[in-house]
Image (cartoon, rainbow, N blue to C red; front, side, top):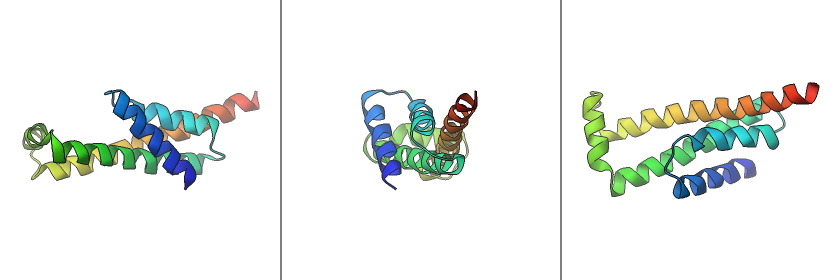
Length: 114
């Protein structure tokens, strides 16, 4: 639980500093490579922390300043509301962050076996 909160905090801090979305992959990858003891735990930490960070940032942007852009993208994708856009993108962020953390763990495991 502490690792999930720490990874989420690092993700939020990096996204606050840098506007790039791919930090949602790099940070869980590094956590999986350095801290996590198994593939299952790495995947779950990446899944939950990536999802929490993406959901919180996207909801913040949707509720404060980016509602027009989200509405236009939702219309373009034929979604009923921007909330569905947030849900769909959060799901993709969760899956990719989970696999990134798992990949980090597997890379460390492969390097340690050599």
